Image (cartoon, rainbow, N blue to C red; front, side, top):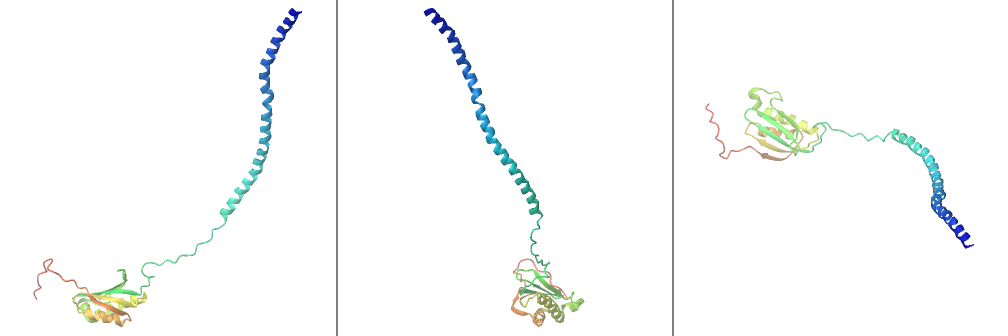
Length: 202
C-alpha cells in the first residue's frame, strides 16, 4: 500500500508543478483585457466630446471672418497746416537792416521763423531811390501788413545799420497798425578785431 501511495504522489507532483507553471502565464491574459476595456470605455466619451467640440470650432472660425469684415470706426480728420501760411503769431520781432544802399525789413516770430519780409527792391525802387527814407517807409508798411494778416499785433524792433531809413521804417511799422514794445540798436561795432577797409577817397 505504501508503494502505491508513493507512486500516486510522484505522478501527481509533476501535474501540480505543470499547473503552477501554466497558471502565471494564463493569469495575465485573463486580467489584462479588463483595464483595456475600461480605457476603451473612458475613451468613448472623450471621442464624443471631441465630435461636439469640432462644430463649435467651426462656428468660431465662421464668426472670426465676420468680426474682421466689420468696418472699423473712422478716425476723425486731422487738420493740417501747410507751411507758415496757417500760423497765428500774436507777438514777434521786426528786424530792420538800413544800409547806405538799401533797406530790408524782416518780421519773425520769437523763435526766429520769418513771418513776412520786404525790401526796397521788392517794393519797386531802383538805383539810388532804394536808399531813401520814403522807400524805407513803404517797405516797413508792406512787411507789417503781411504780419498783421497772420494775427501779429505787437513787435519788438531791432535796428541794424546807419542808413537813412532807420527812423522811417519804425514809423512805417506803427502806421500799419502794429504796436512797438521796444526799440533796440543791434548794429555790430568792431573792437579792434580785423583790419578795417581802406577809406574811400572821393
